[in-house]
Image (tube, rainbow, N blue to C red):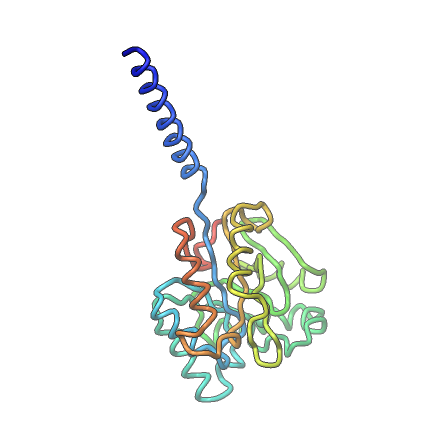
Length: 248
Ligand SMILES: [Zn+2]
């Protein structure tokens, strides 16, 4: 009889231990905020992004280039899709995108700042949040980070004007020829998992992914973007958020 009791107690203790350790595991797995951010739009591909986001209903951020919006009727229409999409926040990525001559653009500090302020006005952007073209720089809540020296003064001046300057933690790269993504969906998901538990992001438990508008020219069902969203949302620890909610 006593032996049965001892065995029962032992089993009970083992089960309690397992349950307790699992509970601890859940408690120590922090939530991770994932920011999908799209640069350079509107471009060919913006319409697909808009469709995917309307169907998936997740929050994203787009960094808009004014010169692309005014380029033609189609791009203006894509920009209007973004305006009307309740899951999309639009932020500033400069008017000219430095005409892709970054050195010269940032050397003339006044010109680069004016270009960004002009973009804010012409696109009627509601939030003072900017990503510098060609630069991964941060000015947020007194913290700062630079990738190169050229552009530092522009970032500082914008911060002094009340702008949040935001960069990124990881880029989903693309082939210049056709815009197709280089890393697979699995590679990107693994990278997010790694970053979520590391101290390699600008803010811990917050992962900002840089993506470009021209990357998703396939329709919704075949899109790698949809696949990435599906795999990210299958992990209940991940929360999609927009850059204006980034901690500071
Ligand atoms: Zn850009």
